[in-house]
Length: 118
Image 1 (cartoon, one colour):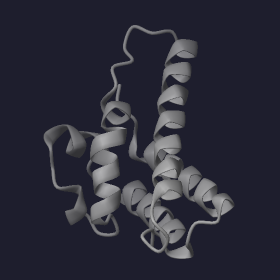
Image 2: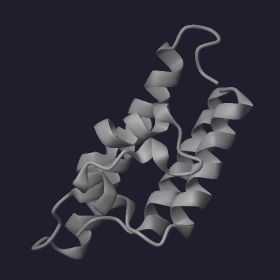
Image 3: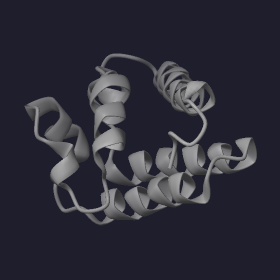
Image 4: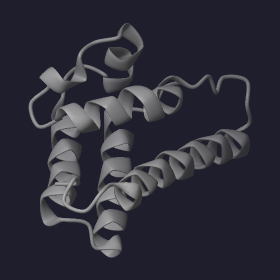
């Protein structure tokens, strides 16, 4: 079962919180928050778009860099197969994927050259 848009939006909000704590530039934090609101309001499933290979950068408020991160890092999360798992195991698997995704996002920001993350 893929994540719903509201769950993906909550992840983006958490990433924004972590970036803010890490001292990332305000424009980067704002990009995640804006993307969260956009995804939450979308009538189509972001998970379905990722699965179909759609160009996510064409979605209003999702820029090229975030679209790449979603396609590369979050695709397994958005389309992960959870059927047959107990509720506790599903929650654990989703939590592991969220931690991996957030960690990759923060690592990307931390390792970027000064001024490269906007």
